[in-house]
Length: 358
Image (cartoon, rainbow, N blue to C red; front, side, top):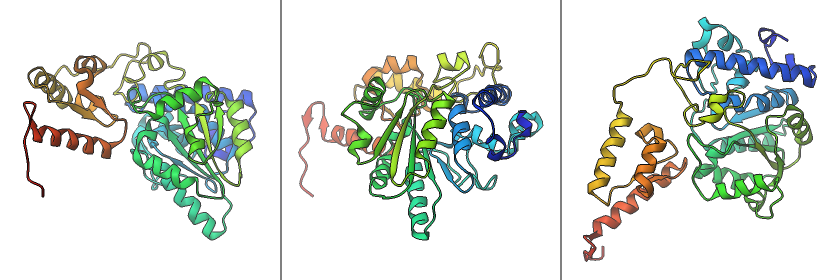
């Protein structure tokens, strides 16, 4: 099947595994061709090729609903839902956005960027469906990096109280933009290492049903598990392990670099143009590292986006524990900074400054 023959998910429904596998390879090549010329989110979408194909093969969009928590993982979804031209025709590369967008397609339920909101949004769809007596499947796709955000916990907590169809896909590639940070990731690692059988299971502890899929880039495994849970009558977490950057060696080797890139040489993976001028991120990191040398009270805090403030892996090593990545938990980052600043305000040079009670 040619990519240009795909106008909706219905066009792939009759394909066999071999044909779907060939289609996955063609989609991956088209993604790399566009992204190398245009730039965009490389690693997240290469890792989502098989999962996106399998979901659209098994579920029935737009009747069934898929909510992408971090919707820069939705490029393949867009390709399969009437927007293929924006990925195969260079003149149309800018015809779609890099995120799900309600104005583009009825299959994009929300316009979403970042992050940790998907389970809550999908939970709202579940509640509304049940109130209206609907029967469609509701699927939330949330990345492991998003689980460190507070609203993801809140959404999962609410999901466990529901008594009807709700499918929560955890796309676990063991990465956020950079490496993951937070206690939950020890449990995800334990679940991966035990093929999901460990007695300590965060999702089950929340009261949710659970299935583990070790080979999240294998179409047959994915189709089988999606068919198994289609029309399920209660909430379930599908913990699916994928490989960020799958199928492109530079992206597999340098996951942080290829999370999002400007145009690059497809053969080598090197950027096509290099800006030798310092940007604000470089300036911020350089300034803070210099401050750290003279002031032991300086701490740099990021919420899952170290590159935005210029803290490359090398600079993170230089800063040591004076650099704190709290995962995607922005509220926690602000409150943590407030606590650090407050303590420093009342303790100067190791001496407690007595204050009157308010």
